[in-house]
Length: 470
Image (cartoon, rainbow, N blue to C red; front, side, top):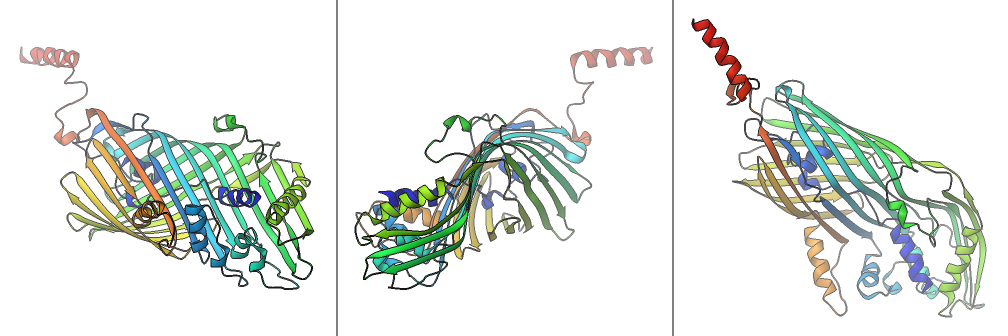
C-alpha cells in the first residue's frame, strides 16, 4: 500500500540516529573517554598502556515514539495496521519519532606519559542522527479521510518537519591533567557522509467535501536528500569522502575539594558538505484533488500525486548540514560504592534535551546501574546496565529504555492489543575493551625504570659502578 510507503518514509527520516548512552558517562570505559575526552581510561600503577576493542564493535541503538497518537503507532508497529480511530484530530498535536545508533568500529588509546596522564586516541565510528515531528492529522489522513470533520479549511494540519543524516567519523583525541584537579580533552574528526534527508512543510491545507466525496490537499515546503528514494546506491556506505565534513569536541573536568566532580562538554559541533549531485525539492503541491475519497484506493492516489509534484521540482546542488552538537554538564559525588551522576544534555542546533540521573553501585569488579531520563519530548525513561570493570578489561551491556524494551518484547508476543500505555521505546547497547602492554607506573613506585631494567642498560650501569668501585 502506498500509505505504508509514505509512513515508512516518514519514519525513515528519523530512522538512523546518534545515540547517547548516559549510563556509560563517568564510567571511564573506552566508550566514555572517546565520547567525553577529558576522561581518563587509566589507573596509574595498575592499568596497562594500550587500550583497544580489537575491532569488536561497541553497538548502541535507541528508538522512541512519543505523542498523543502513540496508541495508533503501537498498532502500526505490532499489527501493521494504522488505527486512525485512536488518533485525536483537529488540535494540531505533534508526535516525536527518533531511532538513533552510534557504533564504534575501532577504538585505540594509549597512555603517552604518566606525568599529567597524557593520553592519545584514534577511533572510527558510524553515526546517525534523526528526528521527526509529525502531526496527528498526517498519520490519520493515510488511514481514513472520514476521520476528519466536514470542513471548508484545515490549515497547518500537515506542517511537519524532520531530518536524518548518517556518516563515518574518524577521530583523533587527546587529554591531559592540567593539575591535580583540572583535566582537559579534545577530539577532532574527519567525516564522510553516507545519507542525508531533511524536510519541512511550511504551509498545508486540507479541504474535505463529503457531499462531493472529494478532498483537496495543498503542501508547500522543502526537501533535501543526498539520494533518490527509488535509487539508493548501497556503495555510499563505503567511506569515499565525496561528502566531506569536520567536527570538534572539547571537554573539561574538575575535582572539587569536598569530593564533588564536574565535567562539561561541547560535543560534535561540525558540518558535512554534501556533493553537487545531491537533490533539493522546493515543492508547491497546491490543490491536489482526490475524487472518490471514500474509496480504498484514495490513499494510494494521494501518495502518487504528492510523489509526482515533489519529484518534478527537483534540482541538483551542493549544500551543508549541521551535526547534532551537544552542550552537556555532569555533576558527580562518590559515596563509597555508590556513585550518582546528574547529567544535563541539550542539542545546540536542533530540538531536544535530557535531564538524567544515573545511580552506580560498585561491588568488586561489578557495576550495577539504574537511571532515570526525562526527555523534552515529554517522556520519562528508566534504564539499567551491568558492567564488569577491572583496570585492564571491561564489558558492559544495558538499555536506556529498559522497562519499555521489556514491554516491547511482551507486546510482540501478543496476537492483538490492548498494548502497553505511554511512549514507545527500545534501547540496547553492548561493548568490550581490553588493555595490554607494559604497566605504566608512577616514577616513585616504579618497578621498571626505562634505560635501566633492560639487559643492555643493566650491563651499562654495572660497568659504570665497577669503574667507580676501583
